[in-house]
Length: 223
Image (tube, rainbow, N blue to C red):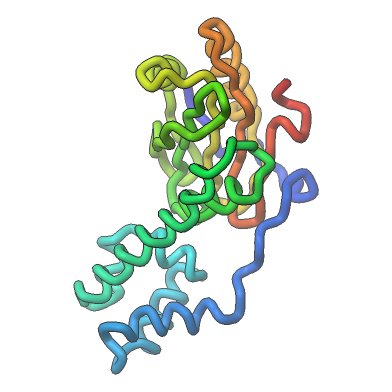
């Protein structure tokens, strides 16, 4: 089953808008690089911003490509990877403190930090228990810039392994637009129908992009 990149008109009004790239982000990137290379911080930050367009884009970039732009400054690359892990854990921590709701801004913030700036489509599943508490979140597929292939049976198999009674689906659109394609909607329906046979609830499918997040449940495509 494939989530195709075609058929995504610009309907940004259908999705919650995400924060614009803050003016201070370039400065923050420069300071991060400056922890290990203060003499080249501005130069390297400019390179990364020119190539990736944002702080999030620089952090989510392919490590090999980023290392090339950093002139193989591995101390800077290690700082980036450490910072990424810290940010992900900070954003994930609130999810373990209360039941998961797809409309919860902490869920949106976590997913934006995890996949919004990826340059290929990633399909993520949050596995929940009977109290809607997070058991695990896993990437179930990585694709191209406009498509990702996932198998509903593998998602359901993982649900049974984890004793999950509910799931929240999410995938990103590297294009920046959160509007789903017909294939996205068909896949969601397939997963929801299959999950229902096992007594597993699909709470929502969130399309995560730089411009915002669209909820299938909020627009009436998942009941």
